[in-house]
Image 1: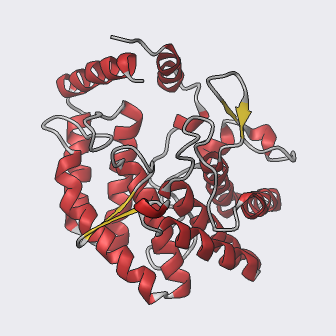
Image 2: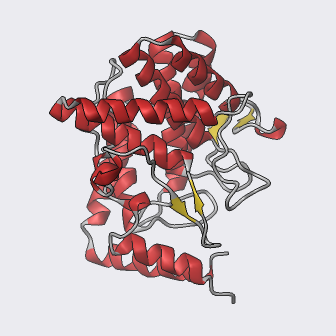
Length: 303
């Protein structure tokens, strides 16, 4: 049995609050169901973790296993969502200016086909993912609304088009009969939180454009998600993916917040049901301990 030291160190940082990728992400503070405003998860701690970046030209960087750094698109996008909420809260223009820098960076780093290189630092043969595409689109349509510049909307459309390209053609969406699955990773089992972040990108784009074709796919993906939700739940905790990985405490919290947001956005009672179920499990010390031990074992042997 191989032990992955890098994964152990990464998880230790998450548990001790030393990972900017895993700060608290509860329910967003400034979002509306039918109006494009704040983001659906609260990303403000992404900003408060690195406050010096707000007044600089720098963007968040990821430290890789090899010792290098990588400007991780998802980290930049989530940082931008936190900035936007700080702007809505404080009305300070510095947050809006930094938000625009993130949106401009997103356009500058977007490939001609609409993709962002999100995973080349770890999966060079599978660098794309629906979560990056969806969050990038969510960022860009908000920039379009705030700055009234069509370049942001055009870039968002390209991001959505790439995300919805079939998986077997190099895109990020699995079309299987009536099922539409948004894949955070092109080559790994379906991840629940990534699917939802991706779906929010479709939701935001349709909210702004009223694109009927994208809405059809969005609705099918929602139906598929509702059908698949029981597979992301075991008798005592939530599951990270459909490959058997249980969630860490961070991702269990995130799942609860995402279920609450999805209920507000869609009105589907099933999301309220799972938010309540997982919150109750979170309060059960035995369940929490079992999930924690199982996750520790998975992290130790994970490749």
